[in-house]
Length: 175
Image 1 (cartoon, rainbow, N blue to C red):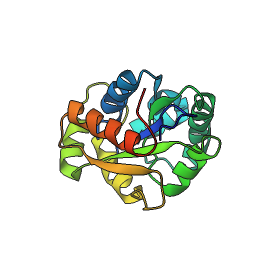
Image 2: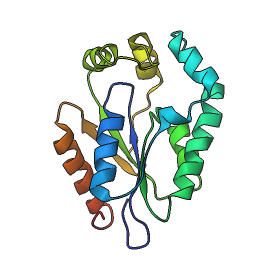
Image 3: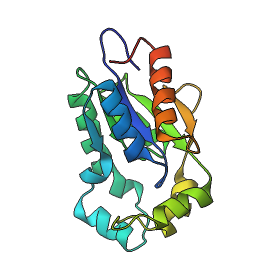
């Protein structure tokens, strides 16, 4: 959400392969705010687990989510965009704990399309085999959550434009 008091603070969320990093980085550039990729905050043991095709547990995710929540809190006044799966409502609540005006933009798409995208990413630790576990964990945004769902079949430019419009409608014009 963007207000006179707060520049946009956004979590670009969704399962692996949804385009969180690409769209999030482009949105941050458009809004002229910092960007972070939550993948860069994973501890080595989480990366090793996922690389081995083992889904993360809530216990694995909690310290990682707390680190991202700290980033959001530190950017609450200046704004920012972070690409983070934020699959469960409880994860989103933790992320929003100290940055209550955080908006969640959910990039949603067909499982087969996203699995193909993940399979085509060279050098990434997240194997396509874990897509099903992410879809099983995913709790879509609920009506009372600050956010919106976007269809990944649109171009990056269209998704950035839609995201910017959504943020403007929720409280002012983006930076």
